[in-house]
Length: 139
Length: 168
Ligand SMILES: [Zn+2]
Image: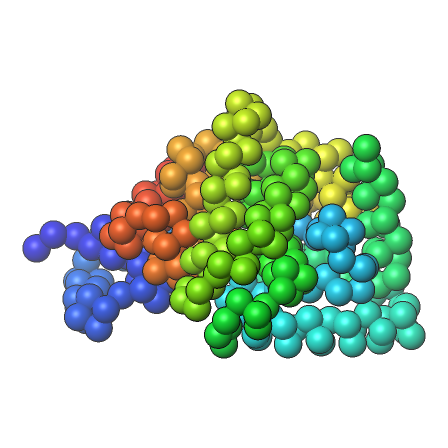
């Protein structure tokens, strides 16, 4: 019986057919080599997924500052639009309470926490900083 | 649901997808200036293309436009993608100054992954970025890159294996 190969990546991504899922589950029970490869693929996959999302100045998008949306990676278009509405609300909230929340060691030890923390939030400080950055791009 | 072209404006696309388009280009090239140019070019093409958009896979449509704009840009520049340096990261507004050491360490960790990505042949890098940065399904990636879904699956898998070798 052949090893699982690319079925392993598709398995991590939830992209298998029901028949393939059964085959993968059965094979993994008895095959150390495929289990090891699965771990390696999972670590490569999460390394890429842990890269911070880089913020884009709203002016680069031709939009006013307050409407840039931090979009989760798997959302439908309208779920994203709902996030847009929420984001506008957050901007208002953060202007009312500009407390400049700092990173904690816990944030940094958790890859997802670190990612979220690295995402420039909607604090007025960050917006001002972004405006400075767009000055560099202007010709 | 996106039913017709009139349901959606380019501003909606900019709001909802602008950041993802930027990060797609940034992770493919490692270069914030290229990503900046690309996101504007894509939004221009979206603006022109929306009137002829027909209901179907919106993600496939958008990312096909994005990918084609990216490849056109690469061909035009005839420039090899470069790796981001810390001062380039700074220009994106990602790094605040003074940044805590922990934040810088975390960015350096990301730099290794970014370098490893840039080492991959284009097709594999693109498949991995569309899957793991943009978050598309295999079907959406297949539509975006105009390749069979089996090809997409194979590229993602081989891309991850190559990354794993480079990251140790
Ligand atoms: Zn096996």
